[in-house]
Image (cartoon, rainbow, N blue to C red; front, side):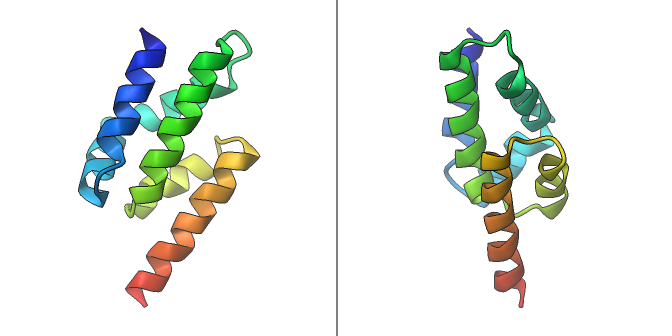
Length: 93
């Protein structure tokens, strides 16, 4: 059930920046990070959380949500978050 939920959240958040922000506004992104980092989570669940986070972050332009992920995420996701930070800042310049 958790794996399917993570997948669904990724599908919802990957469409537009507004969709990604709506998912982020629910407060679920830190939970996905926690589940991904949990040693008791199955590899399938971790993979779905990782894919969902990457899909959502790729569309997320809301800086506070991106900032919150930097301190909690694994290095592979942090690089995705930083790339999105750069994209947002370049778009605003």
